[in-house]
Image (cartoon, rainbow, N blue to C red; front, top):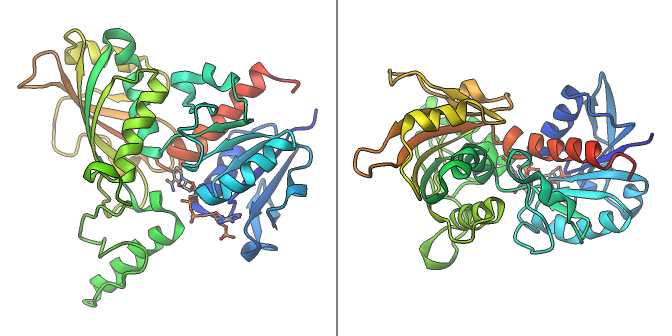
Length: 338
Ligand SMILES: NC(=O)c1ccc[n+]([C@@H]2O[C@H](COP(=O)([O-])OP(=O)(O)OC[C@H]3O[C@@H](n4cnc5c(N)ncnc54)[C@H](OP(=O)(O)O)[C@@H]3O)[C@@H](O)[C@H]2O)c1
């Protein structure tokens, strides 16, 4: 049976990771189309031992497509997503364009796959990368003891801002290492040897990224009252976001129980050893892997029955490409003949 997949934004960091993920997981695609802007038309991208040629996005490019995986920015998703859906494709969109639309499910397979069934627009949204890894770890704890409040500080990699941002960190590292000044184009300042908050401003002095974490967490977890207090920070890391997370519950939850729950949670790798220097999930070890790594699970010293933990995941894989491909894989199981 034919299963054509279109990857929109195939030349970007997430798009390329999508192609890698489809290949590595042997996704049963009969054809994969690599789509991007007219700038990239004709470029060739390695895939399954050969190459596929990048085509410019057009309505015709979605003819016969079963899954259209979008990672081309919110403007492109808003404009082209509905076109792909009107051609019969299930659109799985990585941008922020549709995430909070009440007619678009916001899905992390380990948490709320059932939501993907109801998609009146033909679009399923992939959450923000920081939110995905957090909710994968929160889900088993919420099911057991109902989370009332989460305080999260993020340490987000440069690849989360796209290809050009990742390249800027690499270029600045060379410049600063050679004793030169850092050239700043993508970030609002030097990122090497520094921390930045580079997201657009939102209401109430929060960044848009912080508000995404609040709103998306509530939507995915199905709890509009869950307290979420975020601070998002960009760090000079290439890939993998890290998060320091404090969690409070409707009834006391202690570290031992949390570890037991996390040990068996889908998509989670628990690093359960006691604190020792360097003995924690680290971005460079996690990059290129699929799981959400949770370590440093410990009782809060001031709030009895609350826990603290450290969560690390590859923002390009579980935070984007892998989550989208997993959604498509799950749909193939439940809707095989669509
Ligand atoms: N990076 C992450 O960790 C991450 C995580 C979750 C979600 N996302 C989301 O994924 C999307 C892509 O991010 P990225 O990090 O991969 O960015 P990126 O590296 O800058 O790549 C952007 C891609 O979008 C394509 N594109 C841009 N405008 C287009 C248009 N009008 N029509 C067709 N294609 C167009 C680009 O094609 P050209 O090469 O032809 O310009 C390129 O393939 C964004 O919406 C982002 O918010 C990213």
